[in-house]
Amino acid sequence: MKTHFPLARFVAATALACAAVGAQAAEWFPLPVNSTAANGTTSQVQYQALPKAAQPWKICVSFPHMKDAFWLAANYGVVEEAKRLGVKLQVLDAGGYTQLSNQISQIENCAAGGAKAVVIGSISQDGLNNLVAELKKKNIPVVDAFNGIVSKDVGARVLTIPREEGERAGRYLAQKHPAGSKPVKVAWLPGPAGAGWVELFNAGFTSAIKGSAVQIAETKYGDTGKEVQSRLIEDLLQTHKDIDYVVGTAVTAEAAVPVLRARGVAGKVKVVSVYMTPGVYQGLKAKTIDASGMAPVVLTGRIAIDQAVRLIEKKDVLTNVGPVGKVYTPADIGTLKVETVLAPANFRPTFRVGQ
Image 1 (spheres, rainbow, N blue to C red):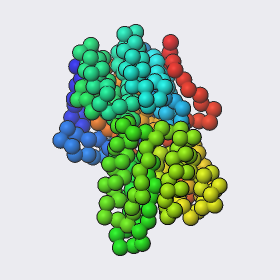
Image 2: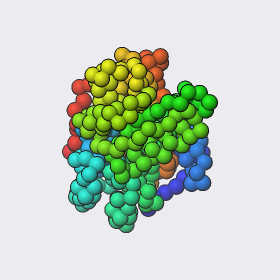
Image 3: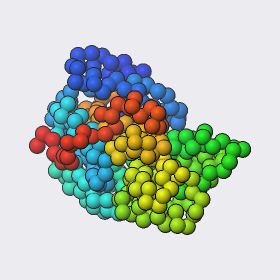
Image 4: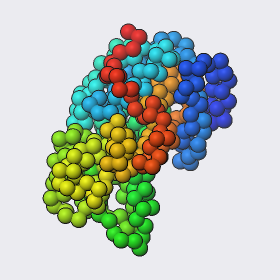
């Protein structure tokens, strides 16, 4: 059974527990996070992680794939936190956003192998509801991480809050192009159709630009592979000759730079990414990308594992948290703490810890 605790009790208890934590732990917490209560109100609090797990519990972590820098950073975060807490980890790669049935079967097999908790970066908002309900019946708590699951049976949510990420990108453009200024047209590429995080990106972005001079010329959905995104961008530029911005996923932004350069419109058509990858980071430094949102993906992975251990051990847990993000431009990208967002350059996908 999952347990809910008042916020004040969580903060007080974890502060005491962390008093003896060494320098390594202090590298990432206390961490400012947005905590959302059951009534929907959100406040900013300082997240404190556990010093160590009581036992080397087995935890399953399921990701849609690990073919881009976002999920590689997520992988790095969960792996490093598992090592710090002293728990066993099995990381599952479903193979892509079309592989919902594979994600479900992988999680079922991992849970049957003795997992005490499951962390899920979901392929679908509602496609995992039956599985989550079954895991709850078996007293295996689920942490909904990164993307979002609508099920009420999850034990805790640690999301990069896709709606807020979409809102941040939209707000950046709306502030640059407020109502009454010259209209600008955006090619909007939020990712694969049907994915929960894409719908949230879309809802946040469209809400943030409402009433501004920013207009969506067309929305194109597609897998977050560079070839797919490049083709979609080419199609949009061919159809709409007056595009001012290409806005979308980090893969979209990375793909847009060479496409725009080849067409001779680099600089004229600007690029905005909803989230950060190494390619986007370099694009900001090189001034080929105009702006990018940032959610601390590595830290989100760390929190997810800490929350999983809390649920296993029935300790205080904040049931809905997300690290605080912002938008970076070439002007301030030098202030970014890269290790909170991206995996190290030499990190490779890691599927097991402690076993």
